[in-house]
Length: 72
Image (tube, rainbow, N blue to C red; front, top):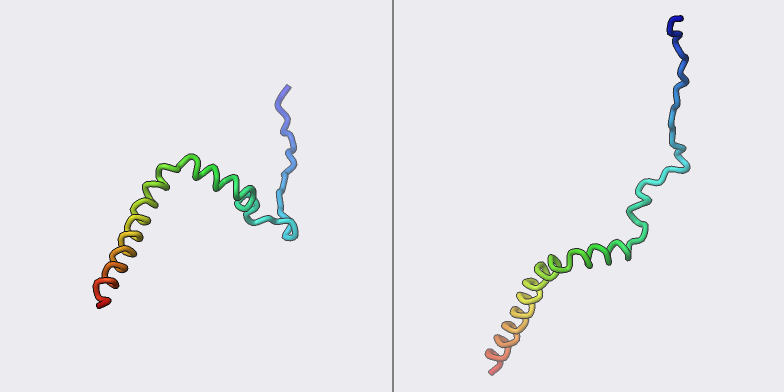
């Protein structure tokens, strides 16, 4: 008994242009994703924001002192 070829049916997948969702997973549960990113990477956020806040507060203090020095 020899092997007989089996006929295979092709499966074609197509998306309907009316039911396509471009980026559905990107906008799901945004607050949860943000909380997860911050809670896992809080030390990176602190290391990023601390120099920025420090520099900003230093500049504000320096400008205020300069204004007061040139006042009279």
